Every structure is written in C-alpha cells, then in structure tokens.
Length: 493
Image 1 (spheres, rainbow, N blue to C red):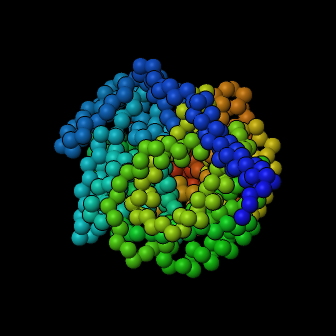
Image 2 (cartoon, one colour):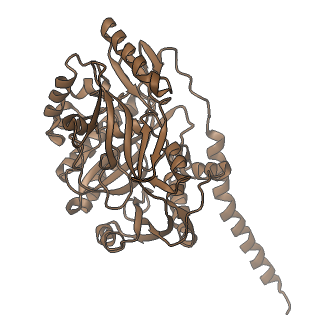
Image 3 (cartoon, one colour):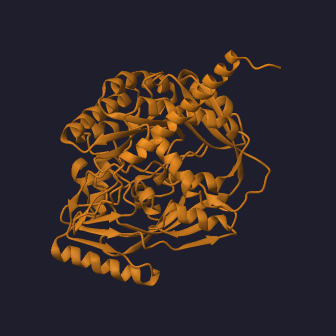
C-alpha cells in the first residue's frame, strides 16, 4: 500500500497536535512548580500562628507537654498554677489546622499537646485508647496492623485527635454524624487541676460541651474511640448535574448497603461554573485488605501540582477537572483499603506561595434546600475577587452529642476552599464574601462551621447558633476565671 504525501502530512500534523496536547499541561505544571517560593516560614520567638497564616500572635510561653503518661498530669497542674499566679490565659494547640485563632491567646500560654500520642487497642471490644495529641495518620497506621480502622474521621489525617474533638469534625463515612458520635469517653483536666472522666453517663454536661467546645472547658487527655474493621473498597464515580445530586445520592448511596465512604464535588471553572458535579463513592468488596503503605513522593507531588496549578488559572481549573473525571474511569477497576483512602495528608494540596494562603469555609444545608443554596451562592462567588479552588460535598447525619452542634438535622456540608493574598484588601474582600455566604446559608435554614476565620459578628453567630448564649454561660460555670481562653472565645463571647 503506497503512502501518499497527503497521508504523510496528515500523520505529521496529527503527531504535532498530539505533542502540543500533551506538552501544554506539562508546561503548565512545570510553570506552577517554578513560581513557588517554597521558603519555610520561620516565626519570631514567642510567636504562634495557625493554618490560616494570618493569625501571628505573640504569647508569653509555648510549652510542649511530656510524652510520658505518668508525668503529664503533674506538669499540667504546674502550668495551671503558674498561669493563675501570673494572671495568664491558656490556649491548647495540636496540629493548628483551625483558622480563627482557636489555638492562641495574646500574651497567654500555649500548651502544645502533640507529644501526648500514646495508643492502645482493646481488640475484644474494638476500642482505641489514644492520647489527644496523636495525629490521625499515626492512629490509622497503628490500627492497620490489627486489621482495624477509625470509625469517623475528616478527609485529611494530618490533624490531631484532640483538635478534631474540639471542633467536632465530621467525616465522609456514609450515614455518619460528626466525630463526637464515635467517642465513648475522655478524661479532662479542668481549671482546678482535677482529672474527670466524661462520657454519656458520667459528667455528661461536660461531655457534650467539650466535644465541639474549642478547648474552653479544659485539657482533653485520654480518649476512647470506637473502631471498625479495615476493608477493601472499590471506587465508583458518577458525573451528574447538581440538580440531580440528592436524587442520585439516594439511588447510589442510601439505597446501597455496600457503600462505606462517599463525597461529591462541584465544578469551579468559569466554564460550566457549578453546573457539573461528581458523586464519588467506595463499595465494600470481599477481597482481604492488604497492609497499608505510604504513597510515593513523586505521585503525591504530581497530585499537588495539579491542584496548585488551578490557582488563579481558568486553564488550570479545567485541566484539574478533566484529569480528575478522566482518571475516574480507569480507577473504577481499582481496589483500595479503607485505611489507604483515609490516610490522606494535607500536604497533597499544600500552598508553597508565601504571599498567599488557602482558607476554608463550610456550610451545612438541609436536603430540601440543596439546590436553592447552590443557586444563591453562584452569583456571589462569580462576583467575588477571591479565587475559589474547590467545593466538596459531604453528607452529615444529625448530631446528638455536641451541645454547640452544627448538624441539628441531616445536612449536606459544602466545603469551600479559597486562595487569598495576604493583603488588607483581600482580607476585606474575604470578610464581605463570608458574610454574604453565611446569609445565604441562613436563608436556606443552614449553619456555618466555626473553626474558620472570625469574620462573622456575634449577633449573626447567635442567630445561627441560638444555643451559644447557654454554651458560654456553662463555660463560666466550669471555668469562672476564664483560664482556658482563645481568640475564638474573645470574639464570640
């Protein structure tokens, strides 16, 4: 068969087009990497900050508690005595992923709980005893050796157990209330140095106020958590219109007893903005789970660059959406373990640009107003000058445990991630945007999450959380000198 000049030219043109198609995203990711400063931020002496990188605060003392369980109570009592003698306030810190100064008080003492990370599993009753400073990632790897897994946990495993209890984080486990539902009990050192056992049967008022209590009632020490079996899970993916999300959620998730983990995502590129969605879920399989291993650094870095390449880039946002949706097709044939999926590090989306920061919002909306909320926030987000990077959707069942609860009925949580420049102008823009989004949540009978920036006024917060006044009065009841304190408390009290 003779190859004509026309055929050769066509083949060459096709090859060139293919090279351009492949080369352009690679060049985009390389440019993303090149622009990063990757300068490690060093804080001044006696200063602390949190994940927002906007809360630099001078404090009196930063104290890391001992790892030894027998020594911790004695040292903490000494710290309490020192604080009372010197008239200082105490703030508690773990991995510092809250964003509103929840882990600091100006001129106060910061207690770093991370060293207190012991773990012990009761294999008969499936109960994990764990120090409040432990990271979830460490707990996952510990449990993996026993074929067990955390029952309820947020999407990233980089947070501390005590921090997650203090904000009452929620996960993406099917039919699950927030994290408080998996807590059997915990010990708490109060302002007088007493160690109390708190559960649904003992010191119940403290139990309900400490969970989601933002470190205002005392120091969480030892926690007992429910654990479940680790399992092999197969990934499934559905592309859909947002208006069909709740209908498909019932069909593919609620009516499917095999589903274990599930999340949704909305498209945030200007093209098809909030007009496309995905439903991603993992079904139980009969395959025995293999032992957990950590992802290769090269794979993690590629994923991170794809995410970071979407910052202030319409092309990057489209590329990320296309890659995620196209890669979902072959991923349908893959099997993962529950622990492997849950051991996801926040480093996968790490921002290495020192001139900007990534800020989270979350709004909890009842199913009846799901689409109304999307329609209400769409013009707000399009008009905003802040760069929206991501919207994830997670279902959260009603919370019967935390007093300051955000899920007072079954809701869908809309998790929004923004990139903000560290300028006064963009901080003002974020303040305005946050209030508009909270107003949209209120209009749709929803709530907003409290671990983030303190841009909502006290009166509006109490409209969303009518139990707040009683919550703060109970705080005074147990801590009349307001020894345990932070910027969150100062703002909303």
